Length: 92
Image (cartoon, rainbow, N blue to C red; front, side, top):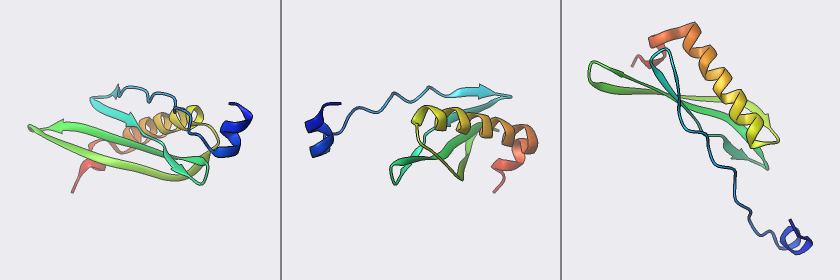
């Protein structure tokens, strides 16, 4: 990034978000949230049950300085939640 881009705040392209990941029949889509110059852990966990798609929004207080770190941590946490709670995370 050049001096003038830093000075005038020209936005740079964010790295592409990874595609959704499958784990034990669930689909995990990581989508870090910007928060005061950092990234908050966020993922959407979905699964089709009896023809209906159900989803769970996973949002944690964890903040990361890079989007890559946040993506990795979001995926790891989503897998942990699925392993611990299974389909109960999708209950109404």
